[in-house]
Image (cartoon, rainbow, N blue to C red; front, side, top):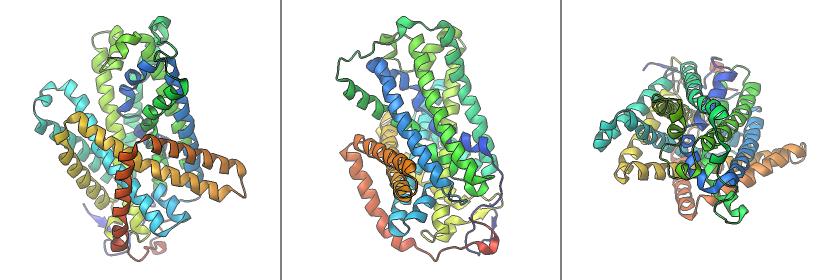
Length: 444
């Protein structure tokens, strides 16, 4: 893999090779991953009230998207949240937020690779017979998409847009089928649990939170985006609204097609919903799920390389992590993230497929929510005197993030604190002179 400026300070990407739809696809494709295909079964026991959970998390996520868009409009530099926080507070606090966010990225990569195996087993049942086969499938998926990211933002953006269109196709097919064949009597009762409605809302909101992680990714590759201060914010907000609509419509469609008692115990709700279309339909849904996970993994891997690159530019990480190849991809950062994801995957596969997925999913969720909280507080502080409306948006986003963090549980929060503390020595050991790039014409 050849490099540019190998002996110079790292320069941020400068080629404007992607536009609105690729940025939109990075966000939509990362948000809509593996979770949507099990969510109708997860929510079925809570009945119609579960849609209140969707609306609550959708509203909170849109508030976060508005905050991310507002922050993205103030910079033309790649790096996303790490750049916004560094420009606002700098120093150790910015590094620790970036550190947690980056951990969340490569942790999520391992989780998505495991989820990919879960759906791949349906297509190739022999893989289930041996954990070694499962590990090989997970690593093949992860490293194939890592090499796609090394091809640069243009190729990664094209692959992401293609995978996003392909993953939305079976979901749209189910929604259309439900419009004609869905039955009102299949829909679950409003509150079948009989629990306090507020408690049910809280449970379902926590269940649906993970579905919106990754909403910010469309604004991350700003250095490669045409008109980034307009394109990134528009893409992030539009993508979040798109994902919310897809989640709610798809959940309602499955509930209308599958009786509530059957749905509550289903291990493949979308495949069950598609059976009325013909024998080929469940396989199509499974392939759609594979594509969906691959799209989420592609977006997550892409941003995993962007974060260390931005930190290297700011002098908060070794400058080698900011080096770009001829396609302006941070190939060393991508490879480093891939190695860490591989190690995490191998260490946790002894838990079994479900146990490993649950562990890495929980860690990825919390380490992403903390940066969301900080972004909300940054916007609250920045707009308090000049734009009260935006300050309110920042406040709501921050409160929502706190609610989500609290719902993650004390054990996971403890792990997050441990990881944050572990980042302190890394900050002092890894600091370098800030890598200014005016000489190369890159950066914002």
